[in-house]
Each structure stands twice: as structure tokens, then as C-alpha cells.
Length: 369
Ligand SMILES: Cc1ncc(COP(=O)(O)O)c(C=O)c1O
Image (cartoon, rainbow, N blue to C red; front, side):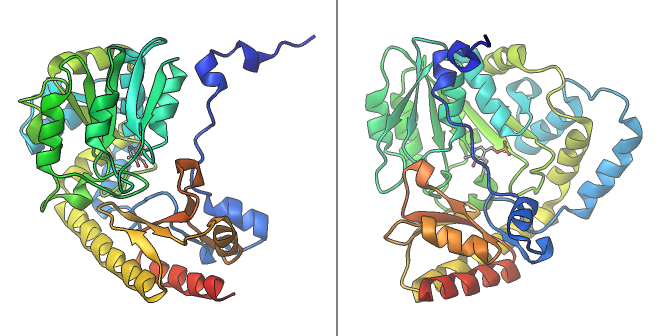
């Protein structure tokens, strides 16, 4: 008789639901027999500009070395990041996407009997990484869809080792300012590691958004995680990084796979960091696209959550699943967020002007039906 290998998995894993990514274009094309070229995907908070030519050159230059393992220490990229942000190299941990960083933290600091605190409507990987190592996720109700930092502080107990906070948050786009972050960090016990997830920070820099890196010196229990997947446009290559104290970085490096970031990703990230024009274009396109979608939502009488990310959550005031279904039939992929406790919302990633316009046109049609 064959064994029940689900029952043999550790209890936290048995209760996990797998991460549901945005539907791939080719999958929808196959399912509905559509031309992939006519499909618009605004579902995974990807950069709509396509790769930067400087990044493509850097990747091409690297191809001849494909038979070699990458530099397991990622020295050159770490050095570039250290120069760029005035850091010490030993403060940096590289990840296979910033997702990898979140998992390294969970593997190093969480275990059965311990817990991680995070908000409702927070990034889906926090509960996955936490439960996967048998720890408990303590979910704190949100306030106005955003993090309720006071309630999160109150949820910390003697078994809490990690707090995950995202600024801005995905999928809500909500954010908190420097004063709120400082107040929070000043009150978190020194023994609790605060993971400040800044996956979208490059879209939001300036204004009222705090720069997490500026808080590291005063708060040794802070780790800032960032990624090249969003504003730098390298989602397929998988490269992210953590900045923390050297001691925390040393711990994470103990559980990290030896070659977790591949050589094409390392070369591309170095090129991307220098490509200030691409970053500026990403920001400008995102700001314009955000205005385009907000204007359309206002005109359609829809409410949305103001967002500092490259996406926006729009509220239909009723179950959004049929609207999502109808959009898919027309070749428009956005992200349902019922799994994030937001069943009346859809999350729409900011696309190019033409992609946004197509989405708006189809949405108008669907809502008129
Ligand atoms: C808040 C947040 N953190 C982390 C990530 C992970 O991104 P990556 O692994 O591509 O760096 C995402 C991706 O969507 C995200 O939304």
C-alpha cells in the first residue's frame, strides 16, 4: 500500500496553500485559443518597459562563461551595491529574488514553537515561509487596508522572532511614513528581527516614503530587503538582496544555497544599477500609468486604494471574481486578491499606456454588460 506523503509532511506544510502566481499569457492563450500577442497581462507587478539594452549587453557578455558556476559570494554585485548605497559589503546578502531573502530569514530564525507577526493583506510569501519551517504566523488585522503598526507591536510575544512589514505593501499599495517607522522600530524588542520589505521602494522614493537603509545604523535588529525584479525590470532573472547588520548577514549566509544567484543575474543586476536612465523611465511610466488608471476608475465610479507601488487595487463593491472572469475572456489578465482577504478587489499592475488603455476599454465593456 502506498504511503500518504501529505500526512508525512510537517504539519505547517500540510496546511499550506501553494502561492498562486499571475496567470501566464501562454496559458490563457492555450485555454481560450487566443493569440498571445493580443493578450494584456497586468497581473504580476512586472516592469512593462521590457529589458534595458545595457542589461541585455551585460547578459550577452556573460554567456561564454555558462559552463562555470557563478561567483557564490556575488562579490562584484555586492561591491556595486555597497558603493551605490554607502554600505559595507558584509552587510549585504544576495538572494534568488528577494523571495529567497524572506525564506532565508524564516529558515534561520523561525522554528516550531516560534512565530512571525505580519499584517492581513500582506505579501503571500510571509505565511508560506513561516509555515514551511513549522512556525506560527500571527496575522494582525489591517487598518484602512494598511499595516496597523501599533497592533503589530501589541501582537509581539516572547515567542516572536520576526516581524514582516512591507513598505509599500503588496497587494494594497499602502505605505507608512518615516515617523511611523521610527516609532515602530523604537518600540520593537531588540531580539525581534524586523524585515522591512522594500520590493517597490524605487517607485516610491522621495516624498513621505522612508528609506529603510537610513534606519539600519540605529536599529541592529532591522533587515531591509530589496529586489531587481520591479523597477529595474529583471523579474525573470531572480535577484534581490538584504541589507542588515554584518552578524545577521553572516547567519543568512549559513543557510543560503552556495550558488543561489546565477551569473547572468549577477551581471544584469550590476548593469541595471548603473542604468539610471532606465530607472527614471520606469518611474515616469509608472507615475503616468497610475494617473491613467486612477482617472479611468474615477470616471467609472470605482473606488481604489491610493498606491505607492507599480500596481493598484480597485474595489468593485461586490464579488470581483465574475469581473475577473469576464476580463480573462477578453484577453486581459489582472490579479484576483480574494486569497488576500479582498474578494471585492482586483489588483492591476501598471502597464504601458497602450496596455492600460486596453484594460480600461475592456473593463468599461465588462462593467456595462
Ligand atoms: C512585497 C513583495 N516582496 C517581495 C516580492 C518578491 O519579489 P522577487 O522575489 O521577485 O524579488 C514581491 C513580489 O511580488 C512582493 O510583492
